[in-house]
Picture 1 (cartoon, rainbow, N blue to C red):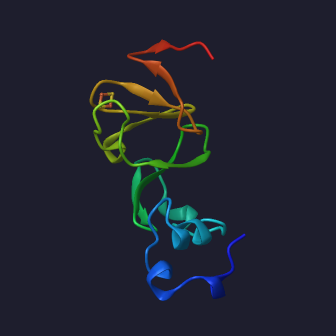
Picture 2: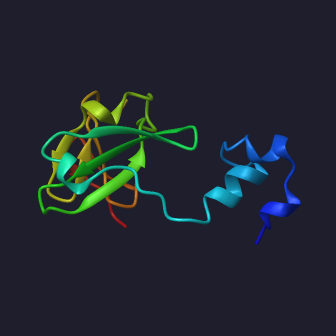
Length: 111
Ligand code: FES
């Protein structure tokens, strides 16, 4: 584990993924929203320089994923909430709570 005293100021203020400061700060839990703020539409969240999307699926579970679809980078902020994840509004790829694509255009993928 990195000790804060080992980081220079320049390393502390760079919090992107893969940086020393970013890796250090990612070793903690971060509050990103109040649970009451997340209702039936995805909520965009920016934390440590990363654009994310927070949503509550139809089963009531909260999930935080990268904000952009891995297919053509459409924003999942406009995604369609599913029973167990979110569907990209552009071509229909579905992401589960771990960010894995489990369905493309309604066709379930095998695990
Ligand atoms: S951009 Fe998301 S499914 Fe194509």
